[in-house]
Length: 148
Image (tube, rainbow, N blue to C red):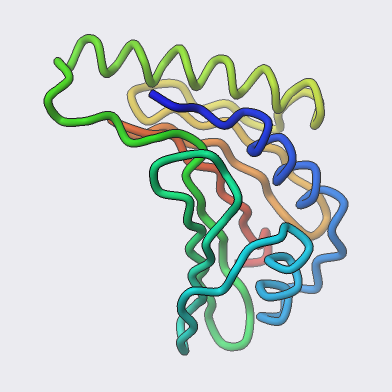
């Protein structure tokens, strides 16, 4: 399982320092600051090609009523379905712990921690909530508008 901890930390640091307005223009502005390329744009969001070193280097954004809702991007590969469940789960858990530690070193103590199969940790700032979320086969970083 490929993990881009350096890329995840870079995106989180950029998100923390970015001047969020809550407007949909934030999506393109943040993408530019992060060095991402727009691959699709529509009424409900934008998809970017990111510079993270993972199998699906994309960020998907969602918006509602001229307001950005969230940006979600993979910070790990997606574990192949042929990998046995126990081994897959261990890869995701170990990677989540490592990524969480790397983010804590930059962002400080998380505002919230949600344990379990779909564990999450998050940090809240004035214009953005930064969340690390695990799923059954991958881990994503989410940048959410705290007003949505």
